[in-house]
Amino acid sequence: MAAAALALAVPATLAAVSPAVAAPGAPPEPQELTWVGRNPSDAVPEGRTATYDIDVTKGTITFTGYREGRTADAADEAGTADEASPFRPTTKMRTPPEPSDCTLYAPVPYEWYGFYRSGQIWNDAGYAHRTRMNSGKWTCRATYYEQRTNNGPYSTPKLAPHSDATFKSGSARVEIVRIF
Image (tube, rainbow, N blue to C red):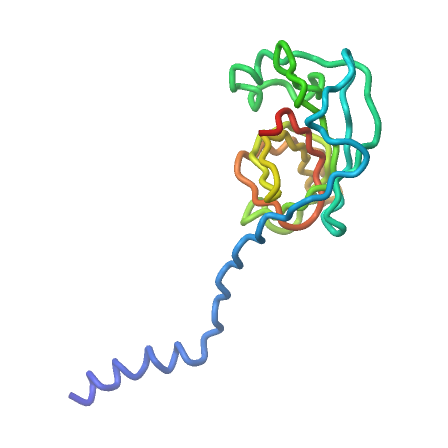
């Protein structure tokens, strides 16, 4: 009887002195952005791509000008763009492009949950991935780019494909191919 009581008491004692594991925080609520300069739903001049900057601190998406050229991307249309070469043209438009299509290069927040952990650096160049972003005001299918670089004396850049990321903090290069 005493042994059973001791067996019950030991786990409770260990639990009392063990450090608690913090539960992962919930993703932030989508942020509604204020468009500055032009509405991306407006028609883009033929042969050009409208570019924007997102500032998540101020909650703004600012028109930064037009870029020449639009490139149809059959891989993106077929849903296989993630397997395509990371060195292909970065403008991905359907054929024919719709007036509401635009390209966005933006500092957008993200947070990785357990990918590659410490000892690596993330930046905004590298392999293209598609994800869905919801600002609370619009939803779009976006492409973001990042590159993993091992943080060491003999390290070389490595492209790090991901299909699952939660935007929360940091920055990424994002291309919006369609605003829904």
